[in-house]
Length: 264
Image (tube, rainbow, N blue to C red; front, side, top):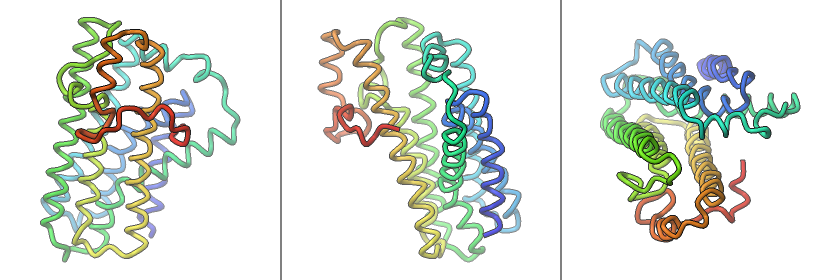
């Protein structure tokens, strides 16, 4: 249990960047927090590391570093994103209790997300490595999906910054970057199979997975509301959203705007 407290302390330290800008709790603090947790897990369990767990930790480190850096660069170069970041609502000083609660929630969530890898290593070297390899492969697919989605969106916005993106992976779902996140953490969860997790370890890992699924659908809802406000009168946009699932391919969920319980 001591290792979980160490991971929480690291997560709190890195995600504390949100005290500068509140939105950083969910963005820059998230990306760099995952990278820091991957490094911490490698240090804590260096004696139990195997090839697939090393690969998993490297992938998580790369994922977090790429995401955090991408968000920082986007903040400085994309006027649309700066408009969101520096919107009066986001700049308004939050009550101290709210800031502390969100800080703790984010730090805990990030720890639970990476916990399947930590649990696999903490439970000893006798776990089957097959599922760790499978989980690493799925995680790699998710990282590539998210990175390509971000690159395609950035390229499309350079061509026409005032038009919604419906090219490349955005032909399949409207939020392929969020889909990439779901694939990443599905891979991490898969890696825990065969690692002799106890009931409470599965609960912690499950909380992390359910938590990030909720966050991704919540993010998709916020994006949908913003796009509806910006492009709602565009017939092409209306046709696009009626025929392209919002997050999961082939799953006919075209809108989550009406689901108030996704508000976060």
